[in-house]
Amino acid sequence: MEKHIFRIVFTALAALIYAQSVQAQTTDPSWLKELTWQLTVEKKCEPEFYMNVEEGVVGGRIYYEARVMCTDGRSFDANRINPDLHFTIEPCEIDVC
Image (cartoon, rainbow, N blue to C red; front, side, top):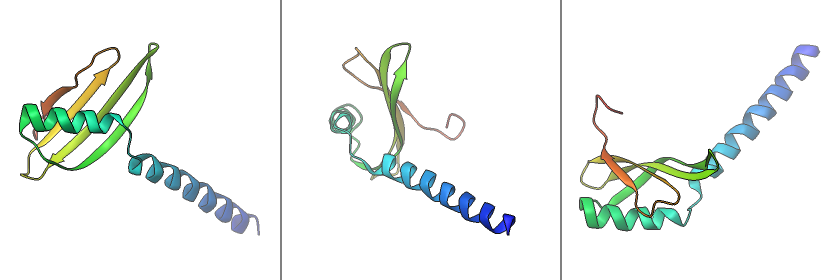
């Protein structure tokens, strides 16, 4: 009986954690529009989708980061730490990412 209750609690907890991570990845933060514009202008990249979208606070400064997959097959890692206005965009290569 104890094992059954443990399994139910563990499954519920795992489902809650998964639901929160899916929600975080599917939200559309406004800064992604800025990143999309910068990718289009600087890298001639039409974003197909974003992965590992994250924002947080480090040392009292807000940071944003994401990996973008372009429609032409290229991929880039992008990040920005406020108060910077532009993202740092680096090609994502096999030996780097």
